Length: 276
Image 1 (cartoon, one colour):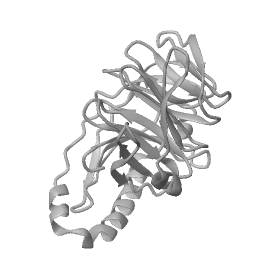
Image 2 (cartoon, rainbow, N blue to C red):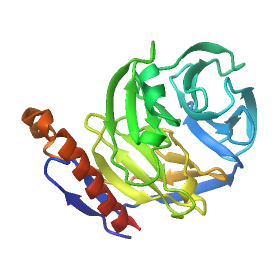
Image 3 (cartoon, rainbow, N blue to C red):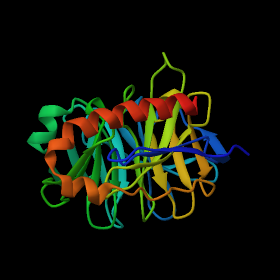
């Protein structure tokens, strides 16, 4: 077992744990798997090889059914208890879908997000609101599911790679952070949804960890898609630590905002070096 190491920097509000305890419980092959979500019984994944969204048996990896994706580049998926949600990276549109036939219940595109994010990817639902990961700008947005209005956003400060998959575990967000083939590694982070603090970080498992795209939470375990396989992960060994200083920063005011972001990026890069 590898012990977690953490760094705390006042005002940056980042704690990063290196080598947290994430273990593979099981996995199965699924070529092209991108977005991922859990509907209470089954997994759903979007495909990089076809404009299709698949319903998958989590025990065997067998395809139970499928629906046509509403766009040409289906990525993030999430489940609201009744309907599927999918973000199409090409059109930068979020769709609410009937899982039985793929018909579109509602859709929206937030102009502010579309203007600054070339690649919206991860999608999560916290019981009331949607969360969207803007990969190209490493920003996570909290959205009103009725109209797509931005409720909250925060920059994750990644120095390399992008913010891809998202999952909500009932308390915190999880984000997959692939750094690309040139780095040969990807990361998993738990994130405080109130502040954007990175609470823990660990190397993503698998031979294609540098393309760890989709994430889903089934109530007990984290699932990850890396474009060739889908993994069931035990993250119970990860122990996020609340970070002091967030309220203090808010009281100091926006004068420190630019400095804080620079320090977040510097500290995050240092944390990544520890994890490798």
